[in-house]
Length: 240
Image (cartoon, rainbow, N blue to C red; front, side):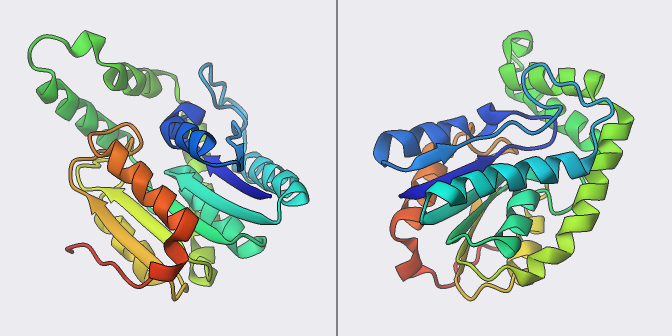
């Protein structure tokens, strides 16, 4: 049996990768796992949660998948990408997908910039109905400062492991992402040790790459990579 685990990002929830997860459920017979990290979800309670709890939960869920599946793929979004990169070096997984991976810190000021772009995009007076704006606005209000520090500690601890990534890897990054600048993905591409790796910049995508204008293209690229991408795994560099 084939298993695929998708890991959401910091202050997020499974909805961040749900379009991709739903597509995989519909078009494969794989066992799909989309865990919710401690303190996260629609009613997040990040007070007192440590970064080690996020690592431990991701490891536990991956081990459960490995117990029942002969082949396992990992997909990580944002902070989930950092977790997935580490897990790919510590456990037997076949392929790795990094979506808007937060290899560098996300700063609250960049969230504000992203909101500013949403305001411009919805300048017809519809910003109050913009779902992404509402989500980011609420994140700024409810995310504890200590939780942000825990996120930084997680990245600091796990980032060095990317040098040891050897499995075939697909990296997708939105060019309009103001939370994780797209050049960060180029750094990841240069850092990981895999000889089979692809890198694509999605020109119309912001941070929530599974929900943006390139969503269908993102989903197809991931699906093709996971189902037969090993054959065509030579370097695909986007413009720097």
